[in-house]
Image (tube, rainbow, N blue to C red; front, side, top):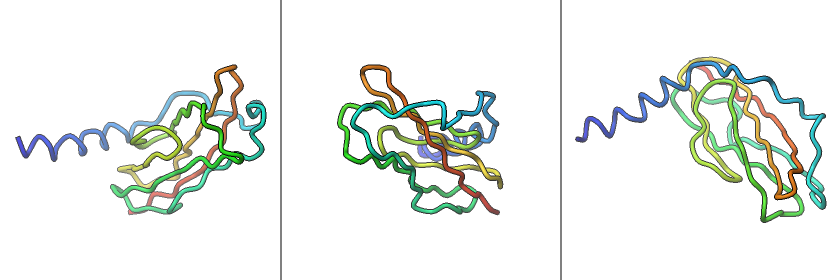
Length: 119
């Protein structure tokens, strides 16, 4: 049983090395929900080693409570959900991580950040 617990994260990380076939998101074509002044993405570390993680947070000013966060990566694994997620990759590359926020009225906004993954 202990071997299985350690094997699961490894399998998830290996599967995450496959590149996404979804189209790129154009940050300029979406609009912010009403009353949201600022939307930015910040990574605790913009350069990480293979197999390590960094947290990525969507900062919104003023804080907006009823938003849905959707995260995508051009490759690698996104762990978690909500305003802050964790990212890891098993390959040296520069994947693009995109967060799309939406409100109950269907208004959407997207931003992207690039993380450098090194050996």
